[in-house]
Amino acid sequence: MDTLLDTLRTLVGPAHCLTDAAATAPYLRDWRGRYSGSAQAVVLPADTAQVADVLRVCAATGVPIVPQGGNTGLCGGATPLADGKAVVVNLSRLRQIRNVDPANNAITVDAGVTLAEVQAAAEGAGRLFPLSLASEGSCEVGGVISTNAGGVQVLRYGNTRELVLGLEVVLSDGQIWNGLRALRKDNTGYDLKQLFIGAEGTLGIITAATLKLFAKPRQSVTAWLAVAGPDAAVALLARLRGVAGDRVTAFELISRPSLALVLQHIPGARDPLPQPHPWYVLVELTDALVSVDLAGVLETELAAAIAEGVVIDGTLAASETQAAALWRLREDISEAQKREGVSIKHDISVPVSAIPEFLERADAALQACYPGLRIVAFGHVGDGNLHYNQSRPSRDENDAFIARTDEVGRIVHDLVHELGGSISAEHGIGQLKRSLLPAYKSAIELDLMQRIKQAFDPEGRMNPGKVL
Image 1: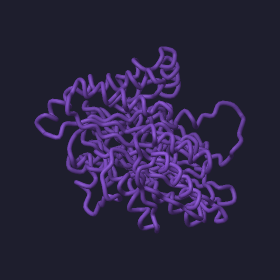
Image 2: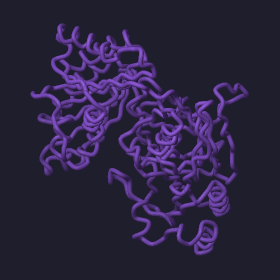
Image 3: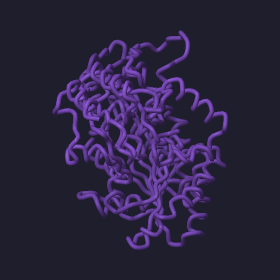
Image 4: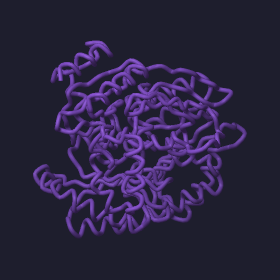
């Protein structure tokens, strides 16, 4: 044991091989506080070569590896198990922005660069990196790719998977695969990078990535709207996309209980409308052209939607400051929930057309079993992804309710499966949903995943206890 730790200290420097309980504590617990684990050490390598050295040593000694970035995941995927066998490899010191190529609309960055820093580097080159998450100031590129994060602009730009051109990956035995190709077309066999995107560090450690950039929008229109219900929201989305196409960048559905938590727990939050309503949507239209009157397009369609009773009330942001304030109401929902207390959380997706049915049937089924339940529903209705969470207002009642997580989840996930959806839209599997996969994945899917895992990690040392 001491030989391994001494070797790791030599490889990364004593200051970057943490074993003291106080020093390792922040790396051994997930953001939600749901999972905590133990590890032989937390190592923070400075570059890809050091990552490879660490993995070679761990491979030689049979030690499990837990890759970790900003530790902002929501399913316990970056938290070690409680057995204390693993070494946590945190990539936060891999900080280089290696190359920005505006002519090729590409940027290459280390895995420890935060999402906000990628956005800023793209902005500095007159380009846009569109991936946007509430945790963008602290989540890191490696973790974002490993979980195939989604965010608020998937409607127009796609998930992380669609934004990755190439990867650099250290394999379980310490070999380095350099797949940092900034190509849109490369038809030379299997697209290996796709295997690592969304794999949650179970196949290898992503140390760098080449990402797509886009033209920077030159105008943006943001509106907060009260709608008659989820069915009205879906109808409004179809209307706006029919006239504006992919200029509809974001379309978020927010229930009143979601907004109420933000108003209660987030200082400075203000209700955008004079009266409360059961359901809201936050809409954003953007364009790189200034010749298109986006505000006029939105106002015309909203006038028709109001006349039809689809939209009840609303406000258009008159400035970037007002738009940012509206977006904060949406982005602060998770933080407000965290301050309120523990809840049962579901990150699900169904076809956009099935969202109203899902909400109606899931609400009815849960309320029948747990009368008076508080349901907090919000999410990216434009791509069919909802965050669907339940709790009791009273702490004593809530503790008993949280103990019934499995049966609550079964009600929600069985309905999702029936509607052709997914039990994890953008948060991943991690520890949280690992045991659920056999119920909702076919036997052949699981077998193929196990074969891939065996090919890349035959000893099962990469992030054990996660996904499979």
